[in-house]
Every structure is written in structure tokens, then in C-alpha cells.
Length: 298
Image 1 (tube, rainbow, N blue to C red):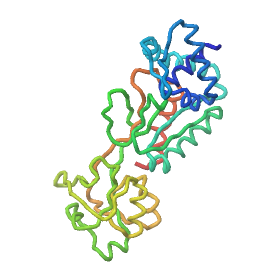
Image 2: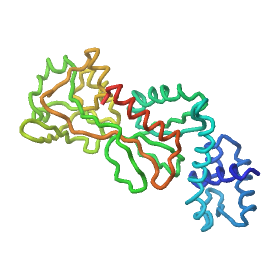
Image 3: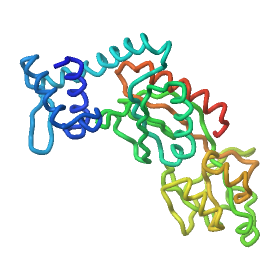
Image 4: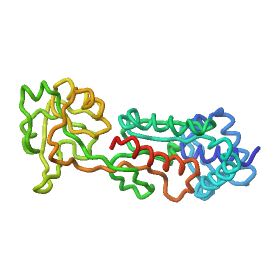
């Protein structure tokens, strides 16, 4: 058995909690994953996992090894990458998580531009509006909108966006145009439940900050869906610029309250605390920061 294969099988199993999930992550068979871990245990002379019919759990020895093995593998991958990246670019797999709307509108295109420079790189993009557990799901990097308070992760701010208020021209013709934030309380507002405070919309203006409580018939957990409903004339939407830009550009939505600024939310790259960040992941973060600036979507 190759020691590196054994360590990779062990780390994947520890992170996912099962040989089956680890095999899917590594792209090998369940049987081979279990074999690699068993051979590693035999080589070390210790049990690394307590096995049950449903799940595997780490022993004390396994806990000691998982604290160091991921960094060792990352260092090895880094060393091998340095030898080849000068001529071929980065290689291997990067597992990435991103919110659904932001991922569909921006992240997948950005990753395509990054991958074009590195033909041996494999991108595994997982879109979810729930915060992924980076360790258990084997995620190398997550793009997140809003502030994160998890102590187990580190983050690098890539930029920030302010929400924009908009509505369809037909809706405005029928219901009138709000002149100030407090007017929104009398309108049908489309609520994006992914926001930290879905029904409280905050704005900054010449007289300071103002928060208004809104309501409406539609509540959705997608900024893109909220924008589409607004474009159909169902009400007023408060969404990030990246979700609104196409509908505003083609005239389906009209920006409102332009004398006021929406509440700012950061866009960050998030990764696990305490792990050596692989060079390819660091390169992706650098690329994303510059790409977001040039794309001018925030």
C-alpha cells in the first residue's frame, strides 16, 4: 500500500464519517477505501476507527492523526504542484461551496475562467444556501455572503454588496412609487428569507440609518426567484446587485430609492482554521478577488 493513499483514505473517511462517502470523494471504490484504511492501521499498529453498521468514529489514535494528516497531505500536494505548475498549472481537485443564486450567476463563470488557466484542475462546485460543514463535507473553500461567526473557519473578504430596491414599471404605475424607505411599509414587498432579517430592510440616508418592517404575499428563499416575482409585477424586491443586474439592464425592473444606500453585506472566501491552505486554493482566492473587482457585480 502507498502510504499517501492510506492517509488520503483515512482523512476522507474521518471527514465524511463513512467509507462510502469517502470513496465518492476520492473517486475510488468503497472496498478499496476500506482496504487502504485497514492497511494503514496495520502499518501503524493501532485502530484508527471504531466501526459500526452505520458509521465510523475516530479512536483516540485516529483523533491524533486527523489533527495532523490533512496538513501533511496538503504540504505534499503543494510540493508536487510546485514542480509541475510552472509548465502545466495547478492540478488535482478543489471542492467549493457557494450560495445558489450567487453560484449560478457569478461563481460558476469565475471558476470557468480560473480553470481555463489550469487544464489539469478538477472543480467540484456544490451549491447550497445552507452553510456547508467544511470539515465533514471535505470542502476546500466556501464563498459566503454575510458575516460568519464560526470560530473553526478563517475568511478573506473579497468585496461587499449593498442591496438594491426595485420593482416592475407596471406595478409602480398601479401602486405608486415609494419616495423614502418608510413608504415600503405600505407596499407589497417580496421577502427573501435567506436574508439575516428577512422582513427588516435597512437603509442609510442623509438623516442616518432607517429600518422599515415590510410584508407581502410572497416569501422565497432565493434572491433570483424574488427578482423574477418582482419582474412579473408581484411587488417590490430588495436584493443584491448581482441578482438584479440583468432585469434592470433589460428594463424588467426599475431601481427605487436611489438616494438611499442598502445595508452592506460582505462576500468572503472561507476555509478551515488551522490547516495549511494549498497553493491552488490560495491562487483561486487571489483570482476571485480580482475577478469580482473587474466584473463589477457588487
